Image 1 (spheres, rainbow over the protein chains, first blue to last red):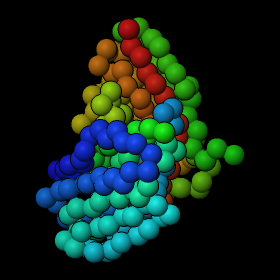
Image 2: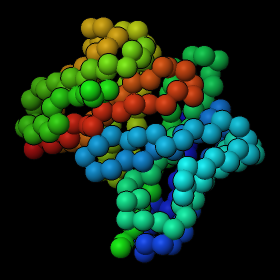
Image 3: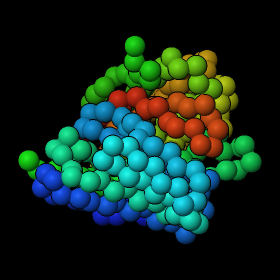
Image 4: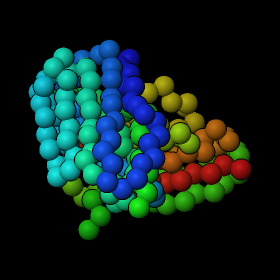
Length: 115
Length: 113
């Protein structure tokens, strides 16, 4: 069973601060996805990283996939109240085409950005 | 148009009752899922169907029975509800390959009293 350890579990910061969320595993993943979930809604995909060492930027959000494809991080620059939400990492395992998109989710990071 | 829609949004019922949650997707995806999110926000897969066939069953009690009448629908029926079944249940769909992103519905909050 692949496990994803996500940290921190809770993060409460002031507007304008930077933050990093980590997602770690002892297993290798073929890709890693980051989702954001707002109250009363389902998770929405932010980004997928597939190559070891890959860095992707989405405005103020920077996503990195570890060289060994066992870990990932999400860095937010100059956080805004609109960034508040639950951030989830999810790893996919390539089982030779038989995984049918089964993802293993981390425990999530609840981010609160205060004005 | 909503891509993945599930009903009802809220479900409050008593222990021992039987209830169903419906899900429909209009994305043309072949694979659909049911996930359970507990009070600590942890998302865990329950079932996955590909073209109406059960692919993944993650050690879910037999009281939970998914049904897929066609590849655009995946319903979840729960018998003899227990207090521990209280959670938010999410339906999702994807293309079904390993890296395919999941498209989630907005969840059904089930409360068993």
